[in-house]
Amino acid sequence: MTAKQPQAAIWDVDGTLVDTAELHFRAWDRLCREVGTPFSRADFAATFGQRNPEIIPTLFRRPVDATESGQLGDRKEAYYREAAQQGVQLLPGVTALLAGLKAAGFRQGIGSSAPRANLELILELTGAAASFTAVVAMEDTQRGKPDPEVFLTAARKVGVEPACCVVFEDAIAGVQAAKAAGMKCVAVTFVGHHSADKLRTAGADRVVSTLADLNAAAVEALWGN
Image (tube, rainbow, N blue to C red; front, side, top):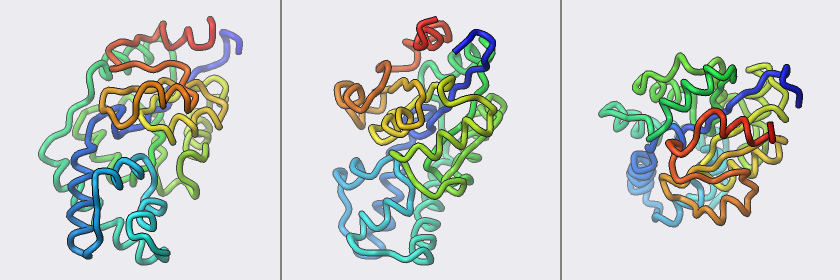
């Protein structure tokens, strides 16, 4: 990579930009109780970061057609957005890193497994929407993480080659997707779904406890510049 090539930062949202994991857990728990399906913290941890089309058959332990999956997913996400309206804040270090990367010339986008309505709500509630030139959501992909489709789509939308992109993630499947896309990856352990060792084993180029431990210069150093 030469200095003249543009660089991009692609952000996962849940667990990276914001911590809304408990809101998701409560929404899934409510849905599963309503339909009489057991649901545990272990079930949640095993599926966190995936798209609803992959989560729902796993939770319900049976094949689920697209129509039923869409209906169940819509109910769960409505519960989630209802709770999120009470207030969501950016995680430590995010505001400064967003600004620092912008000042360093990075293009920035979102690459998430969440439905677009969720992402738009979170970006509105946190005031972060202006930082991103592209948002890739569940509806924009056919395959969920660890498939690299979401990040490759984000790279294309921001107009940057995958090798010049860095992904910010908190989940093993997300780290695997970033590396499969040929991108650098910084993993964050702040929310605590996965240990630093597991994230490194998944391929993370750097693991931090919080994004407050990172700045634009440290991100650029991932390429050895």
